[in-house]
Length: 153
Image 1 (cartoon, one colour):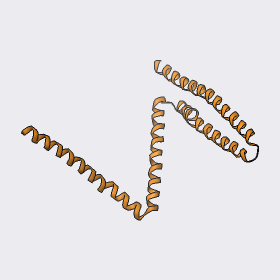
Image 2: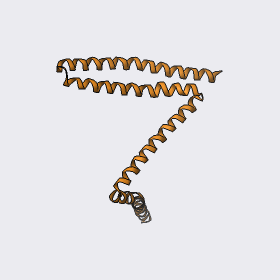
Image 3: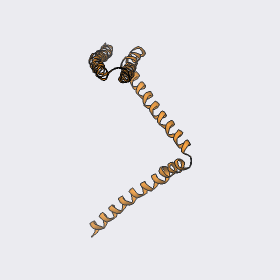
Image 4: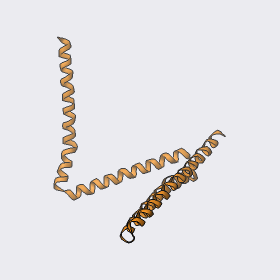
Protein backbone atom coordinates (compact mmCIF):
# COMPACT_ATOMS: atom_id res chain seq x y z
CA UNK A 1 0.00 0.00 0.00
CA UNK A 2 2.86 2.39 0.78
CA UNK A 3 4.51 1.74 -2.57
CA UNK A 4 1.28 2.48 -4.39
CA UNK A 5 0.76 5.75 -2.49
CA UNK A 6 4.38 6.79 -3.22
CA UNK A 7 3.87 6.10 -6.91
CA UNK A 8 0.65 8.09 -6.90
CA UNK A 9 2.37 10.97 -5.07
CA UNK A 10 5.26 10.85 -7.56
CA UNK A 11 2.93 10.85 -10.55
CA UNK A 12 0.88 13.76 -9.20
CA UNK A 13 4.02 15.72 -8.26
CA UNK A 14 5.37 15.29 -11.80
CA UNK A 15 2.03 16.35 -13.27
CA UNK A 16 1.83 19.42 -10.99
CA UNK A 17 5.45 20.31 -11.70
CA UNK A 18 4.91 20.23 -15.47
CA UNK A 19 1.65 22.17 -15.10
CA UNK A 20 3.37 24.75 -12.89
CA UNK A 21 6.23 25.21 -15.35
CA UNK A 22 3.73 25.56 -18.18
CA UNK A 23 1.72 28.15 -16.25
CA UNK A 24 4.88 30.10 -15.37
CA UNK A 25 6.00 30.10 -19.00
CA UNK A 26 2.56 31.13 -20.18
CA UNK A 27 2.22 33.95 -17.67
CA UNK A 28 5.84 35.06 -17.92
CA UNK A 29 6.48 34.85 -21.66
CA UNK A 30 3.61 33.81 -23.88
CA UNK A 31 0.88 36.12 -22.60
CA UNK A 32 3.03 39.30 -22.66
CA UNK A 33 4.23 38.47 -26.16
CA UNK A 34 0.66 37.84 -27.28
CA UNK A 35 -0.50 41.11 -25.68
CA UNK A 36 2.26 43.14 -27.37
CA UNK A 37 1.69 41.47 -30.75
CA UNK A 38 -2.06 42.01 -30.49
CA UNK A 39 -2.04 45.68 -29.40
CA UNK A 40 1.31 46.96 -30.76
CA UNK A 41 2.12 44.99 -33.93
CA UNK A 42 4.78 47.42 -35.18
CA UNK A 43 6.61 47.40 -31.85
CA UNK A 44 6.41 43.62 -31.83
CA UNK A 45 7.86 43.40 -35.36
CA UNK A 46 10.68 45.81 -34.56
CA UNK A 47 11.48 43.93 -31.35
CA UNK A 48 11.58 40.55 -33.10
CA UNK A 49 13.81 41.88 -35.89
CA UNK A 50 16.16 43.49 -33.34
CA UNK A 51 16.34 40.28 -31.31
CA UNK A 52 17.11 38.28 -34.45
CA UNK A 53 19.86 40.72 -35.48
CA UNK A 54 21.35 40.66 -31.97
CA UNK A 55 21.31 36.86 -31.96
CA UNK A 56 23.01 36.64 -35.38
CA UNK A 57 25.62 39.21 -34.31
CA UNK A 58 26.27 37.22 -31.14
CA UNK A 59 26.82 34.05 -33.17
CA UNK A 60 29.17 35.82 -35.59
CA UNK A 61 31.21 37.45 -32.83
CA UNK A 62 31.41 34.17 -30.91
CA UNK A 63 32.56 32.42 -34.08
CA UNK A 64 35.23 35.08 -34.71
CA UNK A 65 36.41 34.84 -31.10
CA UNK A 66 36.74 31.06 -31.27
CA UNK A 67 38.55 31.31 -34.58
CA UNK A 68 41.00 33.85 -33.15
CA UNK A 69 41.55 31.67 -30.08
CA UNK A 70 42.35 28.77 -32.40
CA UNK A 71 45.14 30.62 -34.22
CA UNK A 72 46.22 33.25 -31.67
CA UNK A 73 47.72 35.12 -34.60
CA UNK A 74 45.97 38.00 -36.34
CA UNK A 75 47.46 37.20 -39.76
CA UNK A 76 46.24 33.60 -39.75
CA UNK A 77 42.92 34.70 -38.30
CA UNK A 78 42.40 37.20 -41.15
CA UNK A 79 43.43 34.60 -43.75
CA UNK A 80 40.89 32.23 -42.29
CA UNK A 81 38.13 34.84 -42.26
CA UNK A 82 38.84 36.28 -45.71
CA UNK A 83 39.57 33.06 -47.58
CA UNK A 84 37.43 30.50 -45.81
CA UNK A 85 34.46 32.65 -44.77
CA UNK A 86 34.15 35.78 -46.91
CA UNK A 87 35.38 34.43 -50.26
CA UNK A 88 32.80 31.60 -50.47
CA UNK A 89 30.04 34.06 -49.58
CA UNK A 90 31.12 36.45 -52.34
CA UNK A 91 31.44 33.62 -54.86
CA UNK A 92 28.00 32.22 -54.04
CA UNK A 93 26.48 35.69 -54.30
CA UNK A 94 28.17 36.24 -57.68
CA UNK A 95 26.96 32.85 -58.94
CA UNK A 96 23.38 33.60 -57.88
CA UNK A 97 23.48 37.03 -59.56
CA UNK A 98 24.85 35.53 -62.77
CA UNK A 99 22.22 32.79 -62.64
CA UNK A 100 19.50 35.42 -62.31
CA UNK A 101 20.95 37.34 -65.26
CA UNK A 102 20.95 34.15 -67.33
CA UNK A 103 17.34 33.50 -66.43
CA UNK A 104 16.50 36.95 -67.83
CA UNK A 105 17.85 35.79 -71.21
CA UNK A 106 14.76 33.58 -71.58
CA UNK A 107 12.88 36.76 -72.55
CA UNK A 108 15.36 37.93 -75.22
CA UNK A 109 16.78 34.88 -77.00
CA UNK A 110 15.25 31.57 -78.08
CA UNK A 111 14.45 29.06 -75.38
CA UNK A 112 16.84 26.35 -76.61
CA UNK A 113 19.82 28.72 -76.58
CA UNK A 114 18.88 29.97 -73.11
CA UNK A 115 18.67 26.42 -71.80
CA UNK A 116 22.05 25.59 -73.34
CA UNK A 117 23.59 28.70 -71.76
CA UNK A 118 22.04 27.68 -68.45
CA UNK A 119 23.50 24.16 -68.70
CA UNK A 120 26.96 25.46 -69.62
CA UNK A 121 26.89 27.95 -66.77
CA UNK A 122 25.79 25.32 -64.25
CA UNK A 123 28.48 22.90 -65.47
CA UNK A 124 31.04 25.68 -65.08
CA UNK A 125 29.82 26.39 -61.55
CA UNK A 126 30.12 22.70 -60.66
CA UNK A 127 33.68 22.50 -62.02
CA UNK A 128 34.58 25.74 -60.22
CA UNK A 129 33.16 24.35 -56.97
CA UNK A 130 35.33 21.24 -57.27
CA UNK A 131 38.47 23.30 -57.84
CA UNK A 132 37.54 25.78 -55.12
CA UNK A 133 36.91 22.94 -52.71
CA UNK A 134 40.46 21.69 -53.32
CA UNK A 135 41.76 25.25 -52.88
CA UNK A 136 39.90 25.77 -49.62
CA UNK A 137 41.08 22.39 -48.30
CA UNK A 138 44.70 23.26 -49.12
CA UNK A 139 44.34 26.60 -47.33
CA UNK A 140 42.85 24.82 -44.30
CA UNK A 141 45.66 22.29 -44.25
CA UNK A 142 48.34 25.00 -44.54
CA UNK A 143 46.78 26.97 -41.70
CA UNK A 144 46.58 23.84 -39.54
CA UNK A 145 50.07 22.56 -40.50
CA UNK A 146 51.70 25.86 -39.65
CA UNK A 147 49.78 25.93 -36.38
CA UNK A 148 51.03 22.43 -35.50
CA UNK A 149 54.60 23.37 -36.43
CA UNK A 150 54.49 26.39 -34.18
CA UNK A 151 53.21 24.38 -31.25
CA UNK A 152 55.77 21.60 -31.86
CA UNK A 153 58.77 23.95 -31.65
